[in-house]
Length: 393
Image (tube, rainbow, N blue to C red; front, side, top):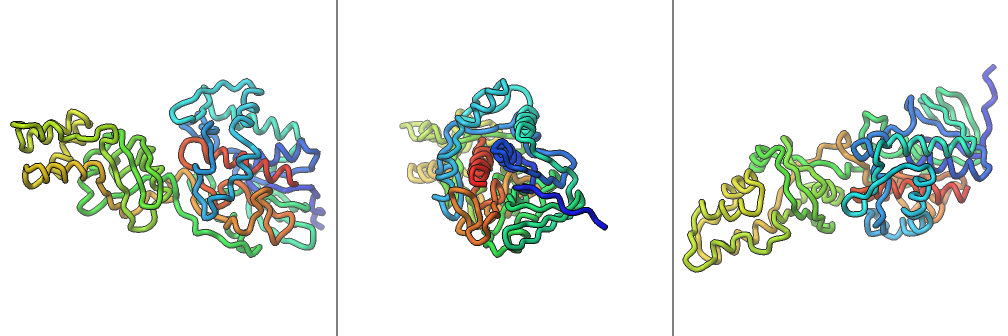
């Protein structure tokens, strides 16, 4: 005879950032908590984040830093648990940190410090973490969830789904989040890669010859804000923080607009002076005075005016500030830092993350249709949504 299922107050699926945070808070509220993780180690995406130093939050976090079909959904959780709250936890563990550009906070040393901190907090709450828990299935009867897995069978009154999205499958990402949502009748906003490099082909393939060149630009998708950060040309297309930010707003066949010189209103002013030389050499020279030389040389080939009249130069100037690339796709979930879309927030409580039609069922973190900008915002959503759920459990 098989052993009777072990009973817990709360079962959390996923030992990533959101899952561990939720477990630690709930455990320290005297709840019996089990975390099931299908990987052989917890927090794998935490360890690789921020180049191994974990960009664990952003001090400038606001609801405007998030993308969702309901732009108001994240407000309650973000107000409940703010960056300063997580920073207080970091400092309690004497983890040294520093601020980089745009309010991004990183560990001075290793992202493992953040993972170890979360695991220590789980220990304080006597949380049971079961690794290598594969083949998870869930049944629900009145007031109880029954979970079967390779690690055993378990029962609980509450189930928290913190299994993330589809980004970085080599770290263990699966579609379990969406399978469970469908099972329980929740709607899903189509998942798509976000914070992801873009691909160029056809007539724009020549730009990949600039592989390794970076430039300070402003990048903007048709439905998104403008991002003033670095663009990086790759052997497949476009990357860098400015492009990753804009990618989260792009849809199929939409262009991304680039201002190659956001700090300079008139790149071509030297050519507009009375008696100035006006030809390709002068055009290239004007560009090279403000842009990386390889980029300037390429633009001199593809953006030079057909004529050297004032109107033609003014048109070329506008083009340099409103250049449109037409990506043929992205590098997909394999290279995406996060998954946009996910569980439709219309089916969840914004205060608790609980499913409106299934009492005791919660979805948190990347599983939900709330996607942060680059720079620590997605971690802050993980912490905030996890705490919102844990305090309601």
